[in-house]
Image 1: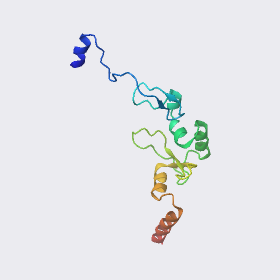
Image 2: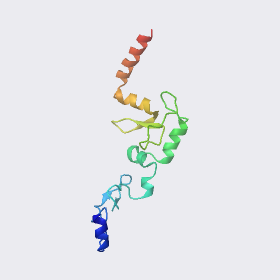
Image 3: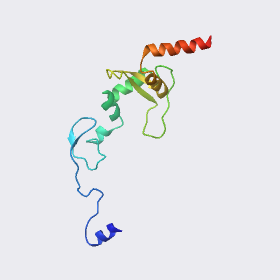
Image 4: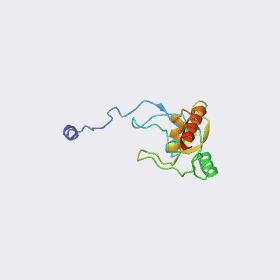
Length: 140
C-alpha cells in the first residue's frame, strides 16, 4: 500500500534504495567487481558457469573434470557405481570430487556414499583397516 502511495506522488520504490553495493572479489577469479545485488558473487556469467565450484574449490578446469570422468568411465573409483544425484539442492553431478583435506590434492571421483564414508573415517587408513578387519571377522 505504501508503495502505491509513493508511486502516485512520483517516488520510485526499490528493494535496494541505495542502488549500489560495495565492491567485492569474484569467488572464481578474484577480480574485484561491483555487484548489482547482495547475492552477486561472480563477476561474469563465465565465472558463474557450471564448473565454477570445481575451479574455485579444486582448481580443476572443465577439461580436467571431463578427462577424470572419462578415465574412470564415469564410475566411482571405490565401488564402481555410476553414483547418484543428491536431492534437489543444486547438485548436478552423480560423482563427488575426492581430495586430501590437508594438501587439497584431488584423488579421484567417488559416489557420494563412498565420499561420505571416507570422511566419516577421517581419511584415516588405519581406522579403515580396523573397520574392514571387524567386518571380515564377523563374516567368518
